[in-house]
Image 1 (cartoon, rainbow, N blue to C red):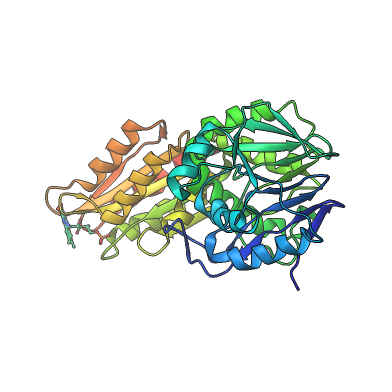
Image 2: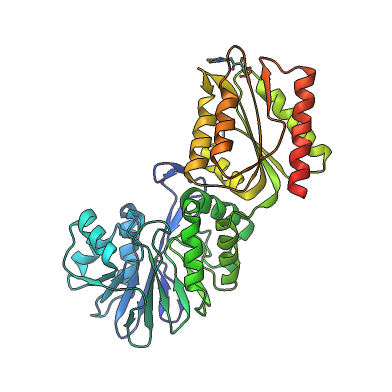
Length: 397
Ligand SMILES: Cc1cc2nc3c(=O)[nH]c(=O)nc-3n(C[C@H](O)[C@H](O)[C@H](O)COP(=O)(O)O)c2cc1C
């Protein structure tokens, strides 16, 4: 049976759970899958809110056709976001309903042409424009660069539902339920933060603009294109996105290190001891070589303290740690209490790269920066403990 789940008596979820893709955007692991949310509105006119990835098209079309039947046709497709995981079924919809009108903004129209060669059937709207389906009056708001230039949201002024595109979304396929009150939110919170930090976080300033722009709306439900639908407490996800995009963090430390032969790892253990001596127990220790970047970025975004350590490799920093700091720079994370340590055997270079990273970003760098030659001495170990203690004091302040 095709499952379409009602949001209201005439609005239905027709999304797809994806448990087959292992890397989102070819980059970010999906251990718990992901879902592509799409919604049908059955009014005097019918409308569909976004689509799914092309690989999920068949199930999706079955659901849509199961709702739009008895001689009815799909009148409107509203494209809030053109990324292919949401626009993959547009051509198939046009084959089924050639008179379908696609609603998007000027940039959507450009992307429709460049991705799919679609130039007809397109109705271009501007921010603030409305579309009446009969009972439901939809209003469009542009939220560019959250996280693509054409991104917009659609607000159902009748039922006060915000169809929010990727804003307020998260990783994780649905576990039977689709609403916040049907799901284990502790589990989803990790996946939502990972999605935010990996995909949207770089555009935090635009998220802030979007939240300010949408602030005047009476929002009773948030229906994003990924992750849970917020019908009981939409304010919860707005507050999370607001805090994360202001780079606010929780008390705790992400301690991320690399080590080839265990010497830098010894330094890391001493730093961890120092944190513990100052009563910081929320310490997430990750080996940069074995934990995927996605989870490292998530924990760096979550906690106030960020401590990075690595050995020297070919006159520079250990490559997986270099990759991490490059990505943290690219994602524009800032405002963390930062600690650094590392090692070398002849002329060094690893710690220099970490220090350069600290100088180029917006961090609160805590002393001492600890660098040891080959194997840490008792003095080096004491310095590492001191670094841990100082970070702990700084995040408590
Ligand atoms: C492949 C490789 C390349 C290295 N390149 C350098 C280097 O360019 N400069 C340097 O001072 N030390 C270099 N080292 C030495 C290590 O940085 C040093 O021994 C460090 O303490 C190793 O830390 P670990 O035990 O945590 O892996 C290199 C070591 C290896 C294995």
